[in-house]
Length: 347
Image 1 (cartoon, helix red, strand yellow):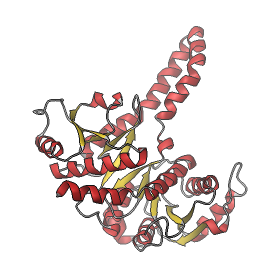
Image 2: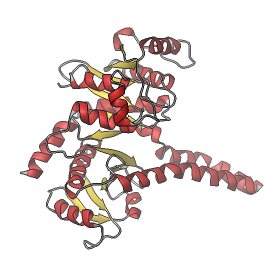
Image 3: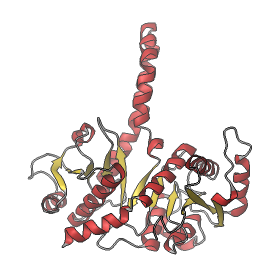
Image 4: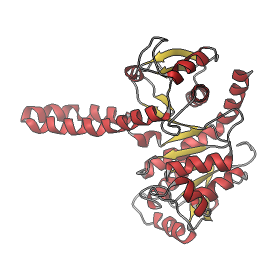
């Protein structure tokens, strides 16, 4: 199904996240308001709860009550929360917002699925219900890391703790296609995260992956170290999900750490407080680049569909940007490009 066949419809897991459904509905309504009718939204969750949340939008300061022809509500009475074990929840909660929403995408009733809910459940359900792109052993989650230049895509960011060399090659292919399409880069530069730049450095899996990547046809820069990520010289950095998730969570802690240090500096003296006041606006602009809300969510690459996964504490702004990210992936046919590249790589 292409975006030209009919108006795009984006499925939203309205019960996903710590502040659902209020934040999710508010963010989706903002997206509909700002899009000018480019797409529709289908909300998945308990119908009475969602219709009440939609009515509340008309009374909230700055709220946007969307036109009824731009959205629909699909009843999904069960909720998979953050504490549920993914595989068990998918078996016992078959009428959850995650399961029903992904089945709608599989059946062609919607074009993408957006969720700030249980990441493991979304990953498992998407793989099971949508299936994998031909040639993909394991789907991967990509996360954008701010750098001195443009953001760099880190794959895998936590979906696959243990990876084989072939999986790392697939991550590189998918990451390269995604970045190339979303940022209009003809030949993204890819690096393999390791403990040294020399070809002899790394564990067994990374050493074998290095050989595959050198023969892949990608713009491969070789082994890179953690310090290279922030340089901005790389567009994609590949690693297993164990390493990637640690790196991602560490990075998420940096803005709060810097803010705490800045506040402590300002309180130390009157002179410091004046300096801090002068630097405040510049710091705010820098911190904005590190705010996950700007990116919204991360793509799940490798499944037969468009899936965007968000942070559990997603604000309405983050939800809005997740929806826009899903729309862009549909329009740029990222999955079609991944399949074509895999065919060439495996030929």
